[in-house]
Length: 161
Image 1 (tube, rainbow, N blue to C red):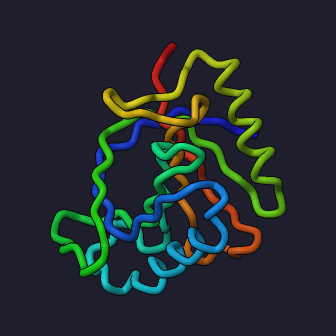
Image 2 (tube, one colour):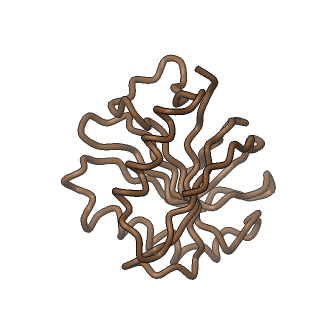
């Protein structure tokens, strides 16, 4: 697998939020992701309309908060029932999960890369995270992906050890 260190500027995103435990993921999380996709036309100021973001923060014991969102410009109003999230400028390790591959292996390989690298995962001050290995995971998903066998880019916020 290829790994790249990139710094992304701060951004604003709007969409839907799901929060729950790992046992509640199916079918709840997929429904929220689909609802965000179904409502994408309400977001007139998408920065990259062909990419839906999945921003996961492991702030729930045995689970996480997930934002199914699109990056938007400041002109975008927040439609009824949607939420806004602002992500600061961070440095990430970026890799790609390829169609036909095992997502668990992709993340296990990424975890091994982090362990062997000069980096460690970023943890925001004052936030309790329940995943010691990758507390924040950002996935950039093409809207034309196959939901049963998706491909997407993974960004993990990192800092130097």
